[in-house]
Amino acid sequence: MSDGPMRGPDAPATGDTFWCRRAAGGALGSGGSHSSVTEGEIIRLMHAHFAGLFPRACPKCRRHFATLRDYILNTERIGGTISYDAEAGDWAPRRPMGAVALANCACGNTLALSTEGLSLAQIHQVLAWVKAETERRGVNAKDVIACIRDEVRRRARGGSG
Image (cartoon, rainbow, N blue to C red; front, side, top):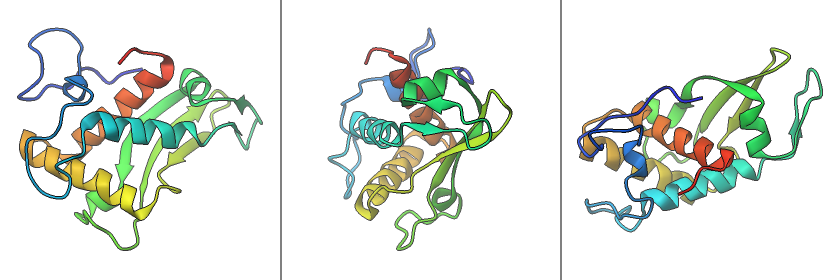
């Protein structure tokens, strides 16, 4: 389920296309250590990480989620992803607090997917990209992170790139 299309300076004028879907692979225009990182690479990294967390089960009802797709189709998303590092303004943490995305199982239990398990270099790469996008687009980090989550969910459901 989507919270609706995200609009920004580069968003198409019509349709439900999120701005982060503009060219899953187009390089960022700004410089810095993240300049070679593309939106598509960030989305692929996050999709691979979250897909790698499965299979798993709800600890309350023991419902089995074989894949990320199964999880997304059979849980109800709760709010936005929380990036504790981004919220603290720490874009290159030595000890990352990470990010968490919450969803409710059909039994009502709250489940969480987190960035735990990503390497420090990967976390720094993602945070640098998020920071650059906030500056480039004039949006806040929550908007950029929500866009990434929406795209990962779309891909996991089987949406085409």
